[in-house]
Amino acid sequence: MPKHGPTLADVYLKTTRARVHLEALRSELDAFRKTNPCRVFRKENHKLGRYEIRVKTEDTPDHIPLIVGDLLYCLRSSLDQLTWSLAKLTTGYPRETQFPIFDAFNAKTRKRFAAYTLGVPPRAAKLIESLQPYHRADPSTHLLSQLNRLGNIDKHRRIPVHGDEVIFNFPKMPRALVTALKFDHDQHMVSVPLALKDQMEVAPMAAFRVIFGDSVEGVSCDFAGIECIYEFVANSVLPRFGPFFKSKRLSNPWNPLGITGMSTPPSDRQYLKNSPTIPLVARWFVRWHSCCEIASRQELTGRRRTAMTGIVRPYSESNAMG
Image (cartoon, rainbow, N blue to C red; front, side, top):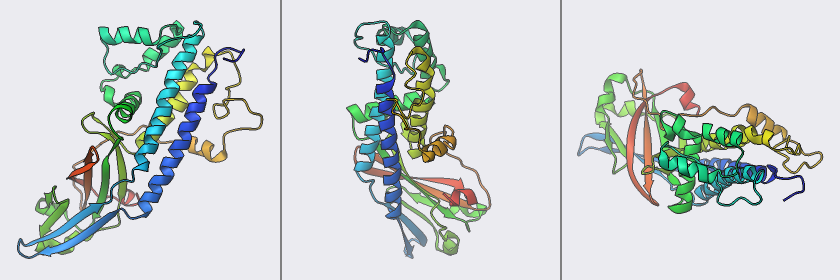
């Protein structure tokens, strides 16, 4: 430990590394989209009198969720190391500390909270407590809860890829004909009577998203969700604890070691300025306008693809732009 006492140097090194993984994930997802992973197959089924559109999506490359796992580990580790550094302010060498993240408030979690934050200054412990997901009406929507569950899936269960979602627009489909749509989830297919074939013209793809998480665990998010988790931890949670440390070497979290001349790159400054707000994950709408779009969602159980879920959403120009 440096002679200056505990600092946030190691903590910010972890989040800096997490940022590297975040940018790698962004790049790999963009590259995957450019391979045109989603294909549409059309067929006139005269026997059934239906016009069929089948959707086939390539499996997400294995290295993409592996990057997510590394990113989650760095973020979760930064919080645990923060707690250790806080405890080090009052303890020679803290043991068994970690940053508590609880969705429920009860006698059991209170006891665990006290054990995890043993030695942490009372004001800092109170600040940690204020960040607990159980303060929210729905704790599962809290970004720390999502980080904790995604990290546990990756560490203890499986690679945290949940599936993918593709949205296709059918701008010529009138509202009155929506009831003619029929989904075959096992075949990843949507169909209409042959007479409506002309109404099934497919507009450019609105969106393709890789979904991370686990339906059994009740956590699901795309890249935007992962990005928001990073932003929350690195730029909202950690800076709140800076005043507990005397060292001024961490005035710039992008330069945790105080190297002369190092500053936040312009692209990063612009990125932080334009960072998205926290999204509502899995927000599904069933509203009607003069036209509609079909969202094809394919989920993975373990590493095996399962059924498609057909969702009807309103088509809009903003969605079509991706």
